[in-house]
Length: 591
Image (cartoon, rainbow, N blue to C red):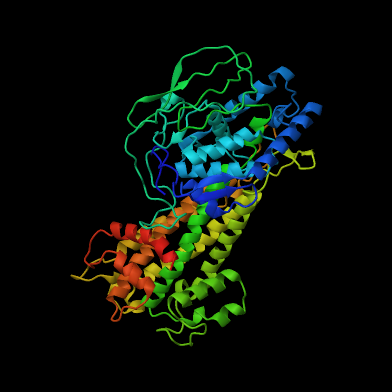
């Protein structure tokens, strides 16, 4: 997916694909389909009824006594009582004050992943938020729009700034992005987006559903001229105030979209106004809604879901790449024999070995002594063990993400028995540790990929010219790809520094630790993108080596890769080769 924060995004899928959001059954694949606009959400009536029941319960509890964030301040102000006539304005002030993030505006794909996760979490029915908010979040996904979210502001104890920015967008205070609209400039009160950059998740030209989508730019068009929809909820009274219009995000033709200026009063609570066609109607903010929306790590979870999906895809593709490299050096296949992995029964290594055997059409028990050497370098001999650990780490990450996106983690938790529990379930230690573990395991297998790439350039291992160079003496061949791979590997290594080791003392010492899952999620996205480059470099070199071999193999993986990658062994820039190899990886993963 290559849509960045300042690019228009395509309309939602019109092919009828749906992802059910019920607070219990969302998986990583569903998050990715919604993030990529390959499906629209379908919210179940049972889940909405659960949300309404929790909201009614929270209303009754708040009427009998103070609840954190409803009748009190938050953080270090937890003991500060909010006056009865300030309850409505308190929530709005909470959103405005906590929308203080900074940094680049995040890509649309990540923002939509957050919307999907937060919608589903709220449908689990533990927050006490009004159902209108849940319906508005789902509507934004259906319409293909998203809030402008800045990169920095979370430390793994709730994505407070991103969700506050989302809340203000739901209220109509900040403009929606996406569809035919561009990111707002400073005149809209938001940071200027960073320069376009490829987002983690490089696509294949013929990607399957759920794989990252290529860059798409839409033609200039304004929003359709249709009667505005009525606003949601009207239980916040109309308040006298100013009139006129303000400028929100411009259309792609450069003309501003007028957004009605909402009346205000001394409480600072605006009445929801009608929305332009193609945008969610503004939602009425009720007491308690603000904290209920904020109490989540939905952005980190959305980013983690995207990273987990792309990581799993690349790890599957690596089986084919490593198999081709093994063939190119006439490596010993006994290291992949099923009995070797049966005596040390970890699922990942056994699966890695089995996949290489399958792709090379080998029996479960390849005979010993079949290779050119009695023992190969670790990049070939220890691939199942090292890569298998990455497979297991990716499965652990998937388990954690899919647990968290289907759980009510809000504080306070409104339980089905009518009790409100104050707790620390929003502390994202499991997520941060799972992301860090995946990054470290990925580093191990990426280092072996770079080692295999180097081995493919050695004449003593392949029997081919050094660096697979053909032409006049001194030709460099694929020499530079070692440097490119190790440059990407350095980025991956930096991203594998455990974010969970971070520490912070915040809010007058009340919050004296932090899990930094949000940092871990961003690092995982960078790590996955770096691994894509390392693996693509290895693929380019492995295919060249097999093309130069006396008898190129008759195997589907080689046939697919050889047909897709540029030919020619003269010294030339290999950038296009690496890009084509990166695009090919999802197709290799499906073999």
